[in-house]
Length: 211
Ligand code: CO
Image (tube, rainbow, N blue to C red; front, side, top):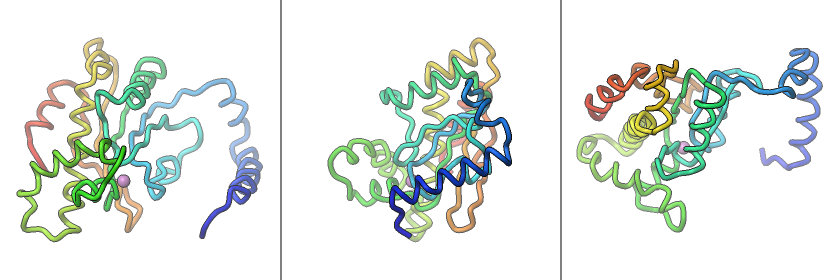
């Protein structure tokens, strides 16, 4: 299964030849610019490649992925992606997607991280400290998946709180936030909560509490 870079280059050549036939004109169009309607914020996990699991093409999804799909107001990388997506590309949807058995979330729950990853996952440690009693009766797998879903709701609340999203809603820009969850075992995406398209809905989602 281990892929070598040369394999990737060869497969890229074959892919580009196929797409040039199947999606005639796509590359020429994309060379002129992009107009995706969706920003995807997901985990870096190799098993959750957004464009592939939604059967989309280059140009369809603007993307930010990091370990455990965290949205932090002090992360200039993620905040820049959100700002550019909303203000320049004018995406209509932002999808925050978590997934089953997230290694980052699991590591934070087990206290098994060191170095910069430990700093990165600090919000998950805090979230877990506040959440663990609620899942005390569950087995480890269930608790982990509960925590993965719980975190998506929190990241969605963080997203709704960003100046970029607040300003977009204040000027009545058409922008809806979505919390999704990917199941590794069957390849399916599901909604975790109702879509959020205004400040009140965001507050209600947060107030509705953990789940
Ligand atoms: Co993950």
